[in-house]
Amino acid sequence: MENLLKTIQSRVHLNRNDIDFIKNYFVCETVPAQTSLLEAGKVERYIYFLSNGIVKGYQNMDGKIVVQHLVSESDFFTSLDSFMTETPSLDYYETITACSLIKISKPAFDILQKETSFWGEFVRDVTNEHLNCKLERVKDFQRLTAKERYVKFVNQNPKLALNVSIDTIASFLGMEPQSLSRIRKQITF
View (cartoon, rainbow, N blue to C red):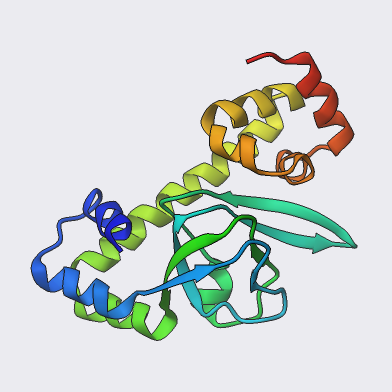
């Protein structure tokens, strides 16, 4: 819970009452590796904060797994559209490693939104940051070569590069595993 509180406090001011709200409405959970957190067709019921571990978010597109999210420690994740509209998700989320998660349900999220002054500002800030990351990722796909995307990924996410399978990284970077293997052989860090 301390990681979550530090992350929130790095963006907005919290008073004692705000901290109590957070502690009352977020739930801690430890999950083993390769555990499904969400399956396509089901409604996302939680927003998660990843305190420890690695999670992937993906879609199954005509039988091909397309990794769209690699989440590392101290970050939030959810199938946002499903969570907000309470409609079936297109996404799957699964732990890659054992994970320590802190989650908040939709009803609890709505209470924080209604009863606190900090929550709306915090959610806007995190949502904007995630949107900017998505926009940068789209630009990277348009402007960078596969090799450049991999080098950027390794530089920005060394822990992910060391702990995630080549197949998962290749899918996340929009290439075939064989292509990524060739690229990795060309590069020395």
